[in-house]
Picture 1 (spheres, rainbow, N blue to C red):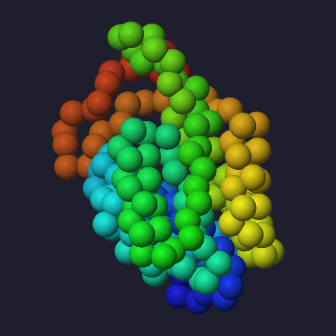
Picture 2: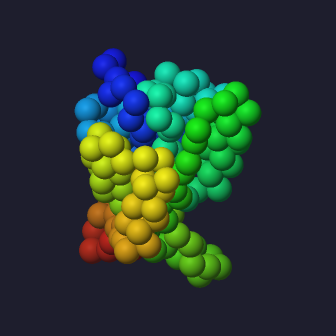
Length: 178
């Protein structure tokens, strides 16, 4: 979390499971996230951990959550929102769903929150620093999410820290989309 607070401004909070990076810790600072809450590898933080992050990040004008569109992330962050509101905090959110992905076996389309999350965090946090209200940030974030699409690709398979096996295999001349 940020050590210095911007009084009476909306705090922007995000997070999720660790794994590839954890990216969110690198985006905490003035004009960016007020706090990030990271869980274990590929597992979101608990609602209680997120609630603690909301409390420490609050700057007096509410807290805005940037949530990645993964089922467990959404459930944890929305439960934390509910808990925070029960304690008197003002909380709003956006669910980022920029990434176009297709499940390998079922070919079911899904929309994950991946690379676009960073852009949403930066745009919303900069607006918060300029004094946008919680309502204005919700409107802005919704517009940004609706206008953004990304497609992830892998040039090589990932290996989860602490494991020896790659999560999938790719031949020398292959890439994996989505």
